Image 1 (cartoon, rainbow, N blue to C red):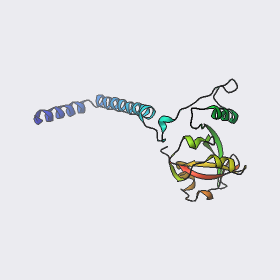
Image 2: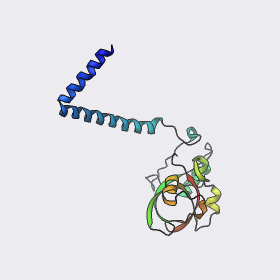
Image 3: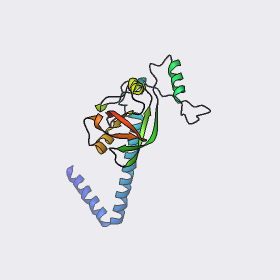
Image 4: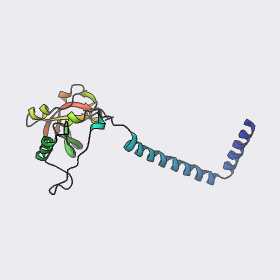
Length: 190
């Protein structure tokens, strides 16, 4: 049985060696097909099958509010408070949005970073895993000095820009020119 398998493999290798252009074309087509298949699977897996790392993710819903004055879904704090006050079937309401901010670390050069801007109750709804520190509470937002912004950093930012400084309160950071107080670090797998 193994003799015919060895014979077939030797014959295949000799045939491919006689026609190098055809061999290169076949190898390229197989590599392209496998690469496209891997990319497609990764996207579908991430979007449809990968479980969320958020505790109780099955109990979280997304609400998109579109009004005449905000057709893109941006809402004011007043609208968010109204939804939260009248949402009798929801345990908690949190909001998030993304915005570019100018970031200055330790008096260094300004750079642009993307920030996830969240409402005061956001971490009651979404509880991310932390690498250091703690999440923000509604008290942090209300009790913080008006000129100090309480923030969480991503693990990548914390590693690349602060060399994983353990004492988060010593990280000198300014966002859009305002001083910020680092409360915690969200793990990258969130």
